[in-house]
Image 1: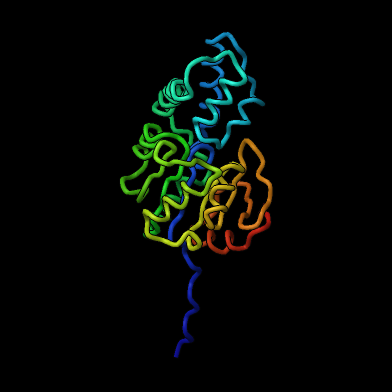
Image 2: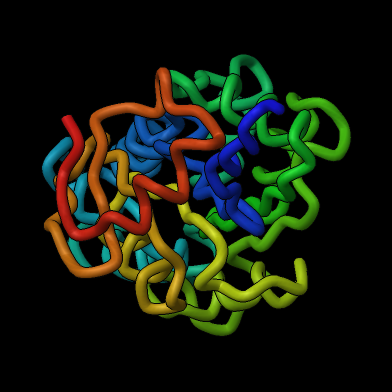
Length: 231
């Protein structure tokens, strides 16, 4: 008689993905667009200034731009101008982050639902979704669909509710402190993959250098081992 097999590693009930900087390296697109609109208004916008906007709700980023530069108009108008430039660049090329596509493909093959949880607006999320196989994301939560953006927990709570899953049984993937804060506040075990800005360690969060080589069965053991850092 063969000995009984040990159960395999648990899979998350769902994986909740940030977009910019986590799935696609679009932050340089945003920074270039911000710099272009500021320069058109006769101002300057440095890389260091751009870093302060990473992960923010778009209207808050627009408010900062209006406060710190000669830009005029409403925050909504500033967002429209900037995201129009980003959309053009995304349609030309989707710059994938290492490991993201492979992990998305594996999760789809295992039947693990994924949600896109981004502060970018729906027009940009649709560009990403169109570049992936149909059904990759079971739901999409965008910055223009929520009342409170990241770091408020609403975006991640909304995604979990739409999927009908307990946030505590999911795993979130984020690249910014603002996004990681949102996921942790929603009670989602979170894996941070710092990209342009560092993420401080905190309860409910584990940090990794890259998604490359990270498999679906690694997510729950890794995320629930927080706090800590995996090199």
